[in-house]
Image (cartoon, rainbow, N blue to C red; front, side, top):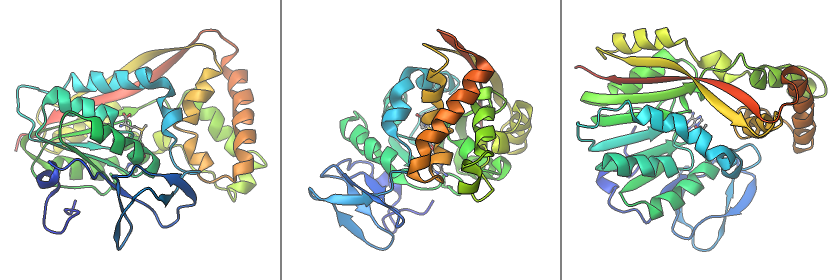
Length: 322
Ligand SMILES: C[S@@+](CC[C@H](N)C(=O)[O-])C[C@H]1O[C@@H](n2cnc3c(N)ncnc32)[C@H](O)[C@@H]1O
């Protein structure tokens, strides 16, 4: 990825935490208050927000509060992934791709005593939270808006991507760019959900193909990225090996997610997989979509209290030999 400040690379700027960077898309629609110290980068100009409102996309964006409702369940695979990282190798440069709201990035940087840390995400709402995480982090961290699908860099010690790779297609090409960004001996650690066959996913896809939603999607609802993009565990293993990682560790793990009731699965997916529908549906169809999905889902999984939500995930960690 090209250095954001002319010729200066990101790790050279990691000492100055006061101004985390947030890029605001032109298509933005909603006004929200940003922290005073956040620097907002528009496409061609940089402005300093001083107690003003900036325009950011929100209705079709991630909702950090909704996402954080199951923070401990969502954090568990992250820390399982971290446990796979070889920690006897110093981490001078850490990059967290699809960092979300940044709390886990900050905690990881602290745990690994990373020299310089960069978090990349495409969501203005998530980056706004990440800016706050950077301010209270004990170590030097920067957050930037970027697209993890095209991201590339040089001489990175560790690339981490927790629950983000599934949002982009063509994993062989994306992983090739990520591995190429590592220094010799550098590590990559990635976690993706692998539960596209669960009713929590199949029911929303079914509802999206019914009226009035199908017409609102102009006959083409957004596909499930987990179904479309996530490969089988053995394919990731082969891929990482072919990219020069001699001994990739790849495993499928089923997380025992005990929800208070079956209905809490709706809360869970509202913060993640349903966001792709909200991004395309008019506001007045959001709630009807959720309720139609709820009815379909409960019809499939039944009313339970608690509900055992078996959640498959793929964890992978590899070290590049070159
Ligand atoms: C499920 S959240 C995971 C956040 C964080 N890694 C964590 O473990 O809490 C997925 C994140 O990926 C980001 N994301 C999705 N597609 C992206 C893309 N193409 N480029 C950058 N970020 C992306 C979303 O904005 C979101 O913050």
